[in-house]
Image 1 (tube, helix red, strand yellow):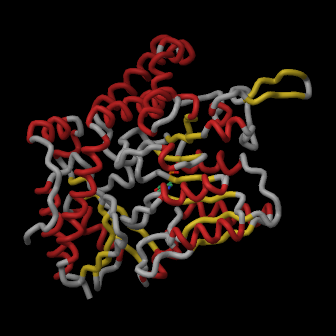
Image 2 (cartoon, rainbow, N blue to C red):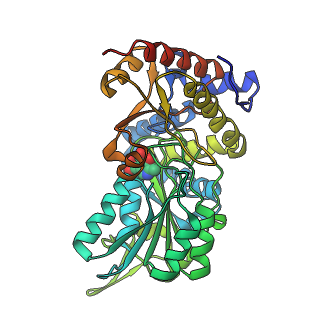
Amino acid sequence: MLAKSNVFQFTEETLQALRADAPASASVIHFNNAGCGLLPRPVLETMIDHLRLEAEIGGYEASAARAEQVRDFYVSIAELIGCRPENIAFAGSATHAYSKALSAIPFEPGDVILTTRNDFISNQIAFLALRKRSGVEIVHAPDLPDGGGVDVAAMAALMRARRPRLVAATHVPTNSGLVQPIAEIGRHCRELGLLYLVDACQSIGQYPIDVEEIGCDLLTSTCRKFLRGPRGSGFLYVSDRVLAEGYEPLFIDMYGARWVAGDQYEPVDSAARFEEWEFPYSTLLGCAAAARYALSIGLEPISRRTPALAARLRDQLAAIPGVRVLDRGAQLAALVTFDVEGWDPQRFKSAVDARGVNSALSFREFAQYDFADKDVEWALRLSPHYYNTEAEVDTVVEMIADLAKSAPV
Ligand SMILES: Cc1ncc(COP(=O)(O)O)c(C=O)c1O
């Protein structure tokens, strides 16, 4: 089968060096970067080194000794998204960061949360939980007629008509390759002075992200996916405007606030008010190393190679009889989703696993609106990254073609 798409090439030497930094790439085809990227060797070494130091000199003493590297978590993530280090809070996951952000908004009954039909499952559940507890109204902006993501003009009209307390958009959802126009949405939010929260969990490490250009007030991500940081990590960006307006999380601790008198506390000035006193320091240092690693390769080249590898995969899969590629949209990220006629999802994934390819399954309940619109019950997700090769893409295509031919009845 001939690939239609032109994949941006790293030199062979660069590619081999990148693969040598990801030892698993020698034994598996890791197409589950949207789940969790492979840790680059410097990230792993940084983390192990810190754990060793904790064991050797004591946990508190180790973090004090590494104060400069700890600070680099904030500096490197700020560099990655175009803000000051003081705008960044560490979080245990993207969902942790998102809940902290939502908890800072004093919702009242009748307040509107305006979001999209492709926002992440846990965000949608959090909005429903807020509706149950605080009586907010959840409004979903309609999608474009071709299913290629949110209709920004319709969303802007809803902003004007409903004056939402919060506008929330997911850049790249978990369940398809769709890229939503978050900067266009942001321009309307800025014009109308609306609070804007972006979920950039699948785009950090895959695309250059600039919070000024997006115009968001809050942005959340994990570090473990395309950024290739450790599990159990993420961050929250909090804009200067939000900090100045005094937003603070519902539960704030001795790190996020000063207890200035028996009956009084004052939140700290920076985004640290969204953090807690205790940190998994080896994880935090691993995140800094991952951000430095991505920055050293360059987000621009990554954003050309990674989605292009996925496009090569998507184009070839679409030509296989029985395979239905499900990604829609003008711009598509490195998440390739499809289902295969005649296969049960778990058995299909097991067959893919057995052939040495890492993948992920999505089900209807992960994407109630999107999967209902597409009339699908399940999808296999393949998500390559820059360190994967064109040859791996072609091997996977052949393997899926074989499986599609031999669907059990
Ligand atoms: C778009 C999106 N947002 C949020 C999350 C949640 O991230 P975490 O598991 O770090 O909470 C995911 C995870 O897959 C995601 O894909």
